[in-house]
Image (cartoon, rainbow, N blue to C red; front, side, top):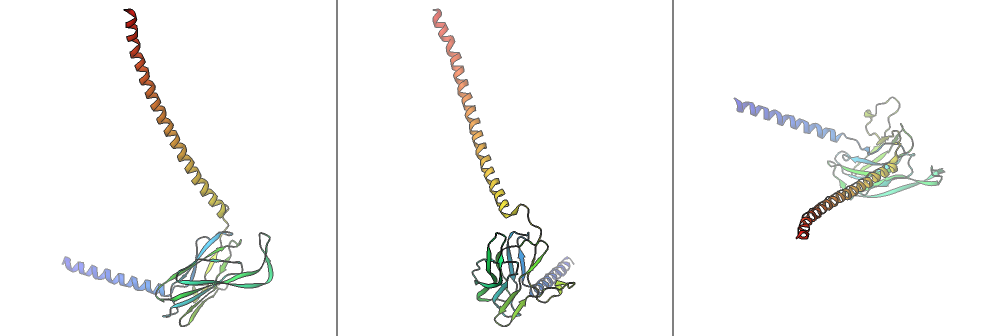
Length: 244
């Protein structure tokens, strides 16, 4: 009876595990090319990871062209050993004045990754860009991405219209929603970390010196006490010699 119950439970567990794997496979197959930033604060420097979860149906990915939103002037692509990468620039219709007072006439419009070998459609990869997010809290910026495969391509560039559910889109553009600026800022945060580290080193050094001083003081007291007792024991002997 017990063995029968064990077999039934085992069969149920296997069936449940298989169903879970099938669901995971379906979820992976329907996944979109998306943008995952490590920061979203306005005016901050963020690393935006673009996940390539699958190919075009059963065809491997050969190229990924990521278009930068107009709010960005440049992006620094991270090296990926499986891909070559290049920047595509465009000439602006009118010169653009930056916050620091300088003026630019060109901007980086696209980052293009080309696979050294087609990415298996059943495998995923990640492409990372370093960007400075604009001072636009509450705004969503879009990165239309063209995924080219050995056969066919997918243009991830759909943007939800007002009142439309983004989840209803078949090929939504990767996006990042900007949040309120960090009052401390990246630079100040780095300075705070450095100050903390310096303080920690200083504290450790002062503690070490304090312990060394305490040990030296105890040793000095010990030597002084020994000398005191030697002198006390020596004085009576001298007195006895004088009385004779």
